[in-house]
Length: 407
Image (tube, rainbow, N blue to C red; front, side):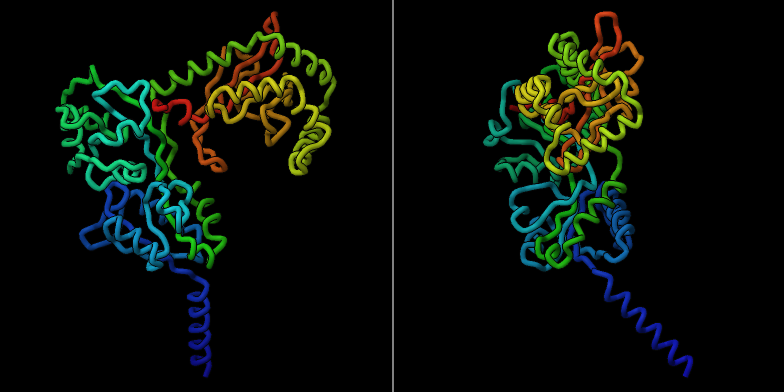
């Protein structure tokens, strides 16, 4: 009797566990190095490893995969036969019935051309033949933007050789793949133009119908994906030089009278603030931010300094995501839009510039989850005529907007 009772209890527990675990039906295609298949038909690759990491953090979900060409995979999802597919690039056709997750993998793409493309728009080449590797995300991405004429090859070596031989005037490719392949043989790059296209995000598309039944899934998946994703793309030396030019533009404001005078006034007003005062003001700012405004926030945001900073941001065509100025304590003196905190003195940027005689500082590239953009912060110290630090000008830069070569 005890054995029978124990057996029945085990069956009930296993049944309960099965009922609380949701199995996702996912589709994918073989696209090394992200997805590949072993000799014993097991899915492997970088994307698979990242996906496994994410689902390890979601114990009440598991997934099973089916492999097919991309058009069939997407059609199965649209028809409700699968719940999602990976890895894929964002496109309007898929957005009709599914949502793309936070990136699981990231690629840096460049456009290479034998033609002058300094003042070109991407759509200017829509009727021209584009070199792409067969079955790659570049072709999917271009097709989503109305491109129809492609010259496809089967290997990276063939791709770069065909481009250097001028079998097509244009090539869209990951910069790391191009540089690595080019190193295998000599090629004349003297007359080749290169333009940054973007940091391409590859993620998991999840159907709307699945999310209706599982409303918490995407938020939890994205939180886990952030921890599982490999490191952000690195800025090339050329990329960094373009950001240096932007930093030099910002540095021109270091001695502007309207900024210096605003900081002198605020530093005078804040000279006797204690640590407790700063914490109280910071909490007041965060409370007012949640409430949509208040005495402290309104005083900062309606100041002449903030109005000028907002104008600076508006003149940069989306390059600046935010611009703000702190006083010598790290407290906001002006901002183009409300910041999440009033006190910035505990930020690494502020600490790195305090006490250092440097013209500007460019931070590391980071992915901003709220805006789904890649950002760097450029910081410029504001000093009095005698060199004393008055405050810091900080600009959040949307790197893709800053580096993008096409208009």
